[in-house]
Image 1 (cartoon, rainbow, N blue to C red):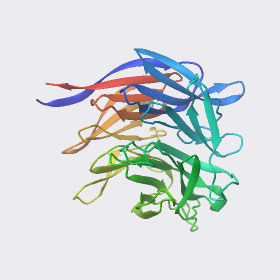
Image 2: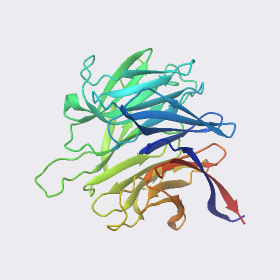
Image 3: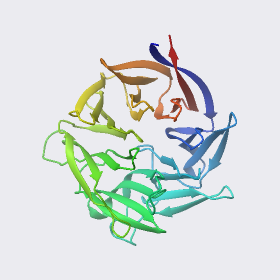
Image 4: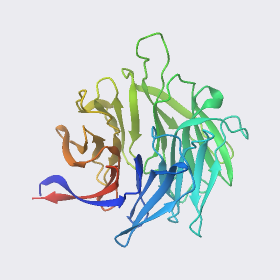
Length: 360
């Protein structure tokens, strides 16, 4: 059997003033859900849409995010409860939200490294730790963010037993351009982020770094080891790390200067590699890449290309791309356990694309 391109069916999710960014996650039943931003009279608001029995439902969380420059995060726990995280538009705090049984949402500010004093955060990225029968870590909310209390350092907050543990991940940075947190299939935690330092250059160097959690326990916040994985980056745009992979790591990111989409990937037993997924030019506009892997560990990246949503796949000969649809809002890609590709993106309307592999 020869595997060909994914074949997508498209449908509208919400046309009520969608601002642009979105984040798609698949729940335990294989159903997609999307956290996104809509415009209201009170300002931009966080909404969650879920596809159940072939129809989309919409819930307003009561949250108001800051701008459209970093993704909202959405993740499900093992009981099917959705959770969101984002930067608050009023206070600048990192916010964590959970859906209650009655359909309402509870929202709370996440402490910074100051402890009880909450100060401005940025680049909020969250995932619920997978339930691998490993109490007390199973279903633990885990949030990565830039911590303004300590000079925009990278930090992680983990909620255990109702209390937040705060970990320092890396030193302060002069750049707040991107951070992405992801668990692999064995609940190993990593963060990909840019760390820029103003050295007087016309363009501040912003090397891409990867941090990995070391062994930790419930009594102490986790510690991290980190290192530069792409020292050549300048003027970075955004970063996305694939979740739930087994023996691979995939980080997708974009370069503002060259408009290229890049991928850093590693496989067990092989040397890491940096590859250009999509060349760029002045017409490309923002790329907003979204990284994911399917159940067979095939690597994929969705990105924008001058008004088109494009899907790239890593094959034996390198990266190949196929257009999916017309769109200009941040794409977000995730695969279900059955291998179905789920993709959210914007056109002014929030759209959803469902993809299956054709064979011949």
